[in-house]
Image (cartoon, rainbow, N blue to C red; front, side):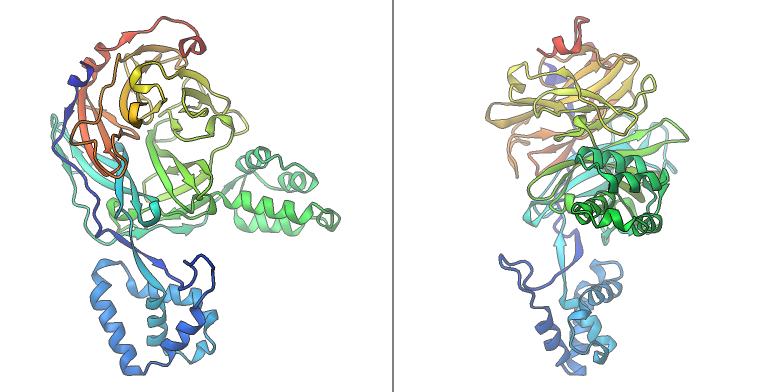
Length: 498
């Protein structure tokens, strides 16, 4: 039995409802028929006398001050967002303005519903460790009220041997703040091409933009468009489309004195307004040094889109769309380095087949080559990856997921050729990790699922979501796993997938 290779750890991460962030709350905007009640609420706060205002403020800070970083600053910010609704904003005292901010704020428990689908990479800080230890950063899919997902983190130390210690996750959470970003012209080109938006307005804008540009340069180029182009019937709509495509890329940053587990990547653009799901982090080692990269699924309530993150230190992140047929659907996972000069990724563009896609010179992920299609009983509904490929001497080790009867998710494994990853070298005959009795019950029953593991001390460490309710950890000796695989005949991948 291949499942006997796996050792489940006793450590489990469970959702913590105390992990909360502060969000803007505007009464009336959460109703089916939007009608803001902001003006009336501010007027009622303004009628409170000075003593009552002070008492309410003190009580609010006593109740919530320890749960949040810079509560005062957040209240000021939320007041600034709604002060235009105040009839005589200049008449409000500083205390009244703070209290208005408090009334327009609410807590959101980021993982009150579920915690699942982790990935694991080496942490940027490897100081203070003993022999045989490595510190890892674990990305988490956090699900809160309304099934809204965000990306959180945990820190752990692996080793020596199979020892695992997860660091305490207490302390106030911080949502990343928007930061200046240098936009990439090639991403704008790819985005407009994908939407088939090609006319004289877009051509003029693209011709005027440099390879990297800031917001000021972008607005200057738009402002200098010839009136003859803007007056055309398609001009205003094209201009809005260019702005929207450009705004899909953004940067977010966290204060230097925050710990990794306090950082929350929260939806920041319309495409991800209903969730950032299933981040697959990998430590990319080509070029001028290691860079953390990730793919994730953005959800706006109706459509999904694949997006990418890049960070040098897991403190500042740049988020960008991924374009092309290989980036459609869920489950894109980047290789940790180029292979033969090619940027490669695993994908599941057709919804049911594990494929291999490459990035072309126009920043579009090409139509995938199939690697492995539903074949065995435990994976007949669909197959995909469980994170980025892991480089070993024997080849690229790929954790897969398969869906079987009763929508039961299990984890399997493939081995790809190290130099020609389009060739499947070997596969595990059966599932490596399946839901047991402790795993099967939860927010989404009968699921074990991972977004990526790593090798340390000869062991493959696999963090996994158990029924979208909690996170477990498993280990398997790499040599034993590869030894249990069945060699595949060397035939074209398209035939091997049939």
